[in-house]
Length: 371
Length: 98
Image 1 (cartoon, rainbow over the protein chains, first blue to last red):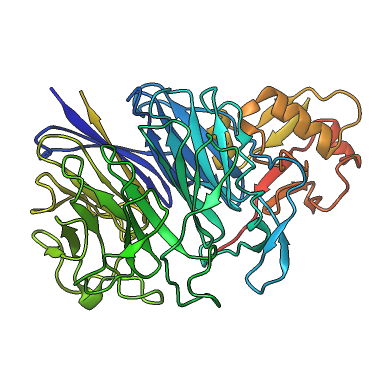
Image 2 (cartoon, each protein chain N blue to C red):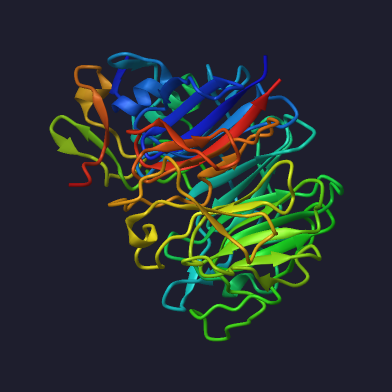
């Protein structure tokens, strides 16, 4: 019988939540890696038993864990992320040159076809790849060596490469996003990159429509339509219909167009989800009401989804990697909050229930649809 | 045998309880002890010192014989009591937070 496995990374460990396809009763396993920050847990699309986790603390640095049994048991694998050559400098918050320094892995993106190939987006922003099941890592340094690299500046959370989107149609093409540099695209499997930020407008930078420097929070793609991308930016929800060559705003009637995650319905490429947050300095839902917004028109026209979500006195945040969808016939939508709740909707967002209420702050939520 | 006490998170990672006992060849120093520790428990690579620079992580401390040895040179001899196995080298996660 089919089911789902929800992989949850938190400030103090990882949790694995499993259910059958009804998604009514949940088994909760964890914490794994108790006491460590788990920025991301990601399963391989090519082998659901292969799962990778990014484990770190300020004390003991970065570890990568690998599971071959769907997150039941784990083994530490390679944790050496060395920048290629002399790393040089980027800009610090005050505009002075600052040496590139590895801090942590924010995001792991397993290959669509090979369980042993996985990409890692790290802080300070760079992209690494492993082709041996995360035993060894090599930087795809063409990104960091882009002409604009020395001008990149960190966002408030650090200069992180937090989003990696692989094009299922073309193995040479991928998109990444960096806070606060923006979106970059490669068409040659990571050798060369170019910024794809035309159409973005950002009030917090000196040149509001600069080629580089935008605080992109998340991008998402539907696999059946890889030239269409959706973006949640620091402010603004955006859409591209030409693989990032140009973007236009689709914030429409959202109560706030600030937020972090954005997701696409697995069966309806024009149905997208965001979680509006009040502002860049008030990281909680407007009016204390936790509302997911759904657009069935690819943006601009949004409806609030509230059934089962707290509609008063709610002041949690939903981080950029903390929302996901399954691919069952009736699409499941999931998100985790900084208050430790993981909410699930088995009906594409119409109704929500908490799977768990009291985890540590949730950093990431990923879903595997099991055969 | 050199005795090493690891912090709880690293004991869990290395699957050990209590003290670790190590054979260390040559002079007993921070570097030679951590080399032996990483050789025995490769999962600890990168957790005590940066794998690229070999520098002690900022929030890891080395204590022994009621002294903070964190700022000693990595190749300086550890106290005789540690070298003889009479006292452990303590690897400590620095106190931080509220």
